[in-house]
Image 1 (cartoon, rainbow, N blue to C red):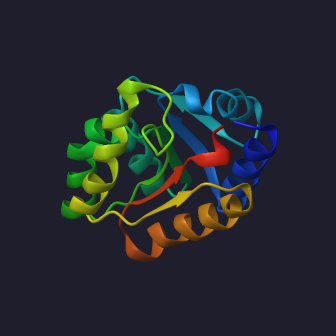
Image 2 (tube, rainbow, N blue to C red):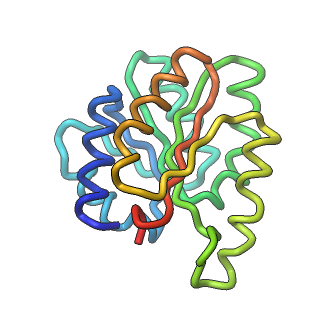
Length: 166
């Protein structure tokens, strides 16, 4: 990620009231993670898998704090069971920001399946999502999406790609 994208993500999270970062780090956000971990505003919680991460993020939300689960879009497949239980059964929303591995222009053959699966899985789970490919869309999308989790009491995903993650 470019420094400008990192700065905008951090500003958007702060303005949205997110103060807890739950994450399973990936290479597309490798510049973002150290910046978040070093910022005293945030509580930074690394996890061992995405299912665990969304459960922790939901618990943080129940405790009255703003949380986000940061992950690669491939982690959506791991998180589906937790997301299903939390969303459908208990109306506990999880706000997610994912990197879009497998988007058009993917440079790695192994990443293509992640892109092919992500949108159909989000749609099957009825999770609203927005794909952000330009820096000028980052802050507003994060703020609106985080707000939507509170209003809808359901998950929302922001997917970063394009110039944002290059």
